[in-house]
Length: 468
Image (cartoon, rainbow, N blue to C red; front, side, top):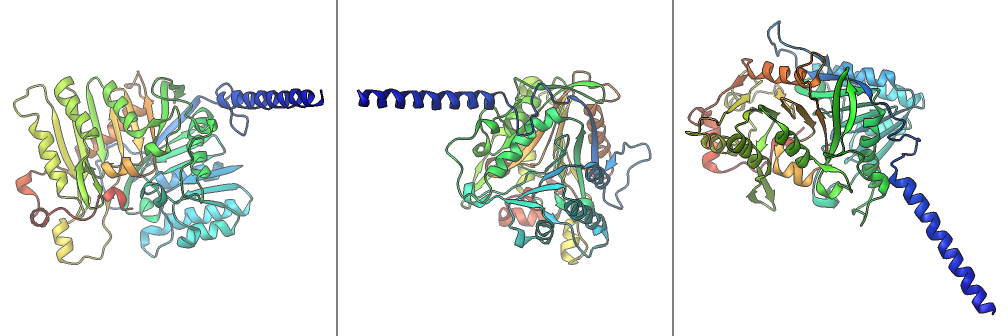
């Protein structure tokens, strides 16, 4: 009898444990985070602003659109911080003797000030604190530095660049915490204010990174609290500057994508597939290959999607690529191949330009051993007649397959509205496209140094997307 009683008690305990697990699982599925933020009580009436860093000496016409500077946008976020600042960055170098490094130093001093005021600061990096004075000094002041051992997962790098302030405000874009992003480099991003609904989703990517700190392998399964909240089928409905919009965030690589999280490549597909008239793409590098153990293979996904839009749907495509001494010569081959598919196809409209911010040719700079730092256009975005994608990657195969990055997709039906962020981003692209910095380089007019590299073979560098 006593044995039967024990069995009954054991069964009841097991049932109770299962019931408790189910209850907590149900709460987890509802998507409420640790601060009580949920889809039911978050803010979705938001303000959005483009932020840019335009290097000194880069001049546009007086009528060209201009936006809040990246430095001022970041400082505004830090000035607004009352509780917390969460930052993911690929670079942590805000100190330098170069004259253009003063803004980086001021940003660093502001972060130190916030840390000394007991504002909770969490920093995600694939660099150990000892490898960066910025990280080490902020850690000494009380900031929490979360190290991700990216090389242990798939030999990738952390290229994500986003901020979350007070669980309300968000930055995402091309710039990292690097003095060059505030000085020498042309960068573009977006800040979304008072938008905790968006934070609800982006915070889960930050939490995923946090869960990997100091770990050498990916867990066999992800917590439900890391699942995506919004995706291509279930987008966040919100107001951005009084314009009705939809949005979701994406993530890479696939290794870092729990259930319901959209891959960056899928997010880009959705934006191109929804385009009715045009697709404008601005990236630093365009190189649809993957390099594995010194072997190269074609990576067709984005390149193929462009071809599909051109030939099968007659979408007008404009591709703006940065041009520098380090541009991989294969870029010109792929561009020529893209152009070739439009030969004798009347409805096929493709144009490619290279954005060159160096005052002299790359060859001349190399021959003269010029010690001045180059200026580069590091924008990483796409805009169509109804949507925009702003991310952390150039369109290079290795970036999407190996590196950690995040993207933001915004859809707006009324993209012609004066307050539309889509309209503003389109104006930025057209400003750059029609500027004297954008040039239509023909294969026969590639500078001699590039032809020399082509004859010798492809550079050993995978892509400028891995250089910051």
